[in-house]
Each structure stands twice: as C-alpha cells, then as structure tokens.
Image (cartoon, rainbow, N blue to C red; front, top):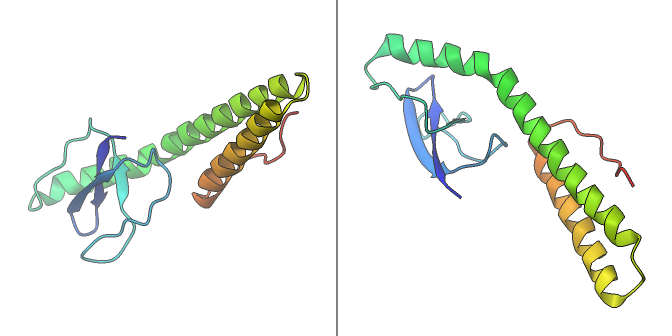
Length: 130
C-alpha cells in the first residue's frame, strides 16, 4: 500500500504514514493529540508559517469530507457486494471440503470488511444479500 500525508490543520503539522483509504486511523497529532486528516497525493501542503493557505486548506478539507465519506461508503458496499456474490456462487456448488473452506474464508473476509468499515463510523447494512 502507498503512503499518504496526514495533516492537523489546527497545529499546521504533517505526518507521512500508510494510506488508510479514508478509514479512521489511530494516528494523532504530535502537538495537540487530535486526529489527523488523510490527504491524497494531489493536495499541496502549505508552509507552516502560511496562515492564510492553511485556513484555505482547512476549509477545503471540511468541504470535501461529505464527498470522501460517500466514496468510502460506496467502496465498502462494493466490496461487500462482491463477497456476497462469491458466497452465493460457491453456495450453489456441489458440497466438498474445498467449498466449505472457501465459504468459511469468504465469511471471515466479509466480517473483517464489516469490522473495518464499522469501526470507522461507516453505516452499512450488515445483512448479507444471500
């Protein structure tokens, strides 16, 4: 996975860490201890002394949050739909040890995806389609 820049607009600090894809992380600002906001590679980080640019960045981050949350929700739903599709496909196959192992692995993967997104505050329908 790639790295991303995380920022604290209050303290005007940055930190590089592994990308979380918009999910909640345990990363905290080293100055104030507050949560950090993940930026993609396309964002320009202003110099610490450039107060006006940091205020504009804070405004842009706040405005982009609903779109980012919608994107993360869509990605979660897509992952769950694909896992549910695979579960349905394997469920219709002839019973075997391999089929049962695959179904168990898919159920585990589905629960991991749910936990990952629910822990980040994403509201999902937790009932499988099948």
